Image (cartoon, rainbow, N blue to C red; front, side):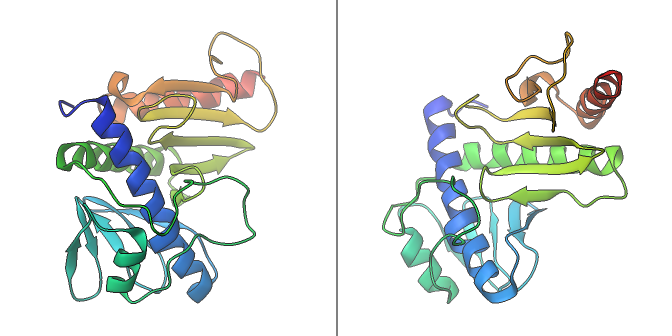
Length: 210
C-alpha cells in the first residue's frame, strides 16, 4: 500500500458511503435486505437492483460509471435508483450525505478490495456452512458462529486501516483478547488466507476456553 493513509481513509469513507446510500439503501427499499457481498474488485448487492463497485467504478446492469468527483446522489441517478441509507435499522453508519462528493484513489480502492477478497476466502474456509455478509452499517465482512462474530473491517474509529477481528457476544478473558470488543489484528500482519484463517481458528479456540 503506497498511496498513503490519507488516501486510504478518504477512499474507505467514500466506499462506505456508496455501500450504504447507493447499494444497500436502494436494495432494502426494493428487496427488503441490506446484505451486500464481496464481488470481483469490490462489492455488490445480493438482490435487485443489481449494482456493484469494482475498482473505481460503479457497475450497473449495462454500464460502468467512474466514481471519483461525483456525488452519491449523482451516482444513484446514473444507476436509476433513489439515493439514501436504509431507514430505521441501525443508529450508526457512514455519516455520508447524498450531496457529498466521492473521492477514491485507485491504489487504495484496490487494496481495500484485496482485503475484502482475502477475508471472504478465509471466512468461507473457516465457516463453510455460512455466507459472509458485507454489512453497510460498519462496512465489515462477517459471519457469526456459536455466539462469536468473525470478520474483516475495512477500518473505523478503533483502527483506521483494514483489520481482522473476533468479537464474542459476551466478554472473555485471556491474552488473545486485545480489543474492547474482543480481538483484532491488522490485515497487513495476516498476509494470506492461511494466516487469516489461523487468526479466526485461534479466536474460536480462545472463545471455547471462555
